[in-house]
Length: 328
Image (cartoon, rainbow, N blue to C red; front, side, top):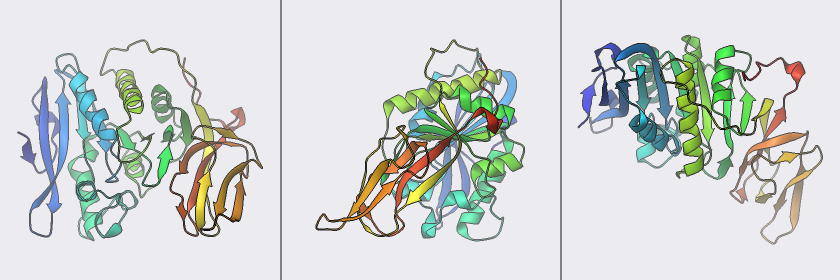
């Protein structure tokens, strides 16, 4: 059984144990409490509070087994510090099988929220106040959304030593330099002095075993770098592609869309990457890469109205960008 609490108090958690908590953040239209499921492991030895969050968007599920399997792998008797893992942040979206929060609001555009405001603002304010403010480090787990697929990639500020090394330790396929946005969970954590990265773990509404395993290894490596776990030797793997920025391409008209490159493919400027046809199969438009880059994610939904997403294109970094180097 999970213990219902109004707010997290890391110092009051039992040392050397796993705690199952439900943190109350509001009520639904019938007056029933809305509670966030939390797994917390407090070690017997002092150390940082390591926060992990998943399902800020209700259909982004790969983070759930990352948290569940990670927590089961921890030995509280040797752990230094505390792991606090919020299994589902966006409970209404998760229950409705939808990406958005209530009223089609994107929860990750409403931080830091307000103590008195609309339902999304109050929800994220209480989430921050009752949980996130206690974190010393944050790893925020996401995926692509409906109709799209993602590589395993990370958004992080690659000019900050700690967040850059957190990104490298996860050994993703791609890293994008992305300073935090104040309206996002990562941005609000940064504003509170909490180093944070966003991990995009593949595709929505499914569990992808390889990406889940790799993300668990990345979280454990990051915890080890914080002195919470013993460091383990990691098998050598390919270095991630580091991008200075990334942008989505969008259709200018509507029709049926086919995108040709796969995620992680490198593309050259002028390379044909997508085609839009009408219901009779006649070509309406052809799209080419505007610059050399790498495909972080792409649309897999053929039904494309005007302004539909095509590909998420990363622009590869060079030494002149001045990003933090990977430690060896």
